[in-house]
Amino acid sequence: MTPPRFVLVHGAWHRGSCWSGLVPELEARGFAAIAPDLPSDEPGQGAEAYVDAVLAAVGPDPAPVVLVGHSLGGLSVPLVAEALGPQRVTALVLLAAMTPVPGTSFIGRMRSADLMVPGYDTGVRRGTDGTTFWPAGAAADGLYRDVAAESSDAAVDAAVTGLRPQAWTVGKETTPLTAWPAVRTVSVVCTGDRVASPDAGRRDAAAIGAELLEIRGGHFPMITRPGELADLLTGIAPVSAG
Image 1 (cartoon, rainbow, N blue to C red):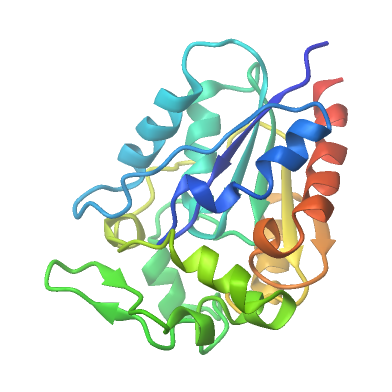
Image 2: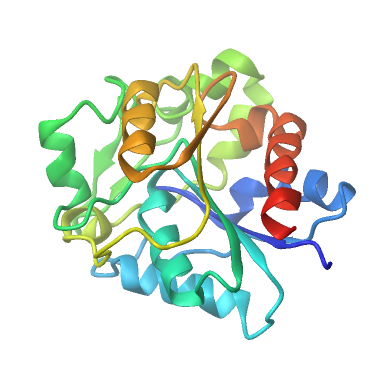
């Protein structure tokens, strides 16, 4: 059977290029991968626009896919899975991800639950259009404090070049998801995550009936440990495609 193609969906403030260290690791293991850009810096664009961007990147190719949503990308990938259907989606992977809950918004959930680790947004600023952005030098001590601790200043500098503003319709809107899609779901919790709470990730995995896997280190394993992450993801893929 043709191995599934990985569809890598980035989180807040990022672009598809944040997966650039992981894609060659997946290819070296015999798996194709695509990493689309979401319209996440455009005010007014919510989950449905994000889904459309992913579906456009996937195209009409009927080959099976493994959907991977990182961080805020977790709000969109279940909707992509719903649109593609279980005949095409062999697995849905939530990587240190936010989990949409029908009838709620992500920001609404943040107000009532400890979903995030305090301090992750230290230094972030809000623009006049309502987007938030990272000034030069601020991300290393906030968003990328995982990367700074686990890797190198050069890795942080390279990651910062891909950052862009984040619009927040996707977080404020009530999720369009009405029920969890009927596909295999795997939640990957980063045990040393200093952005998304590992405990919240475990709780959400249990609530949706996801398989729970854990990987050492912080919030950005595609940057700090791409080979280890590729091993984990390709270990999921053959089972789901069998």
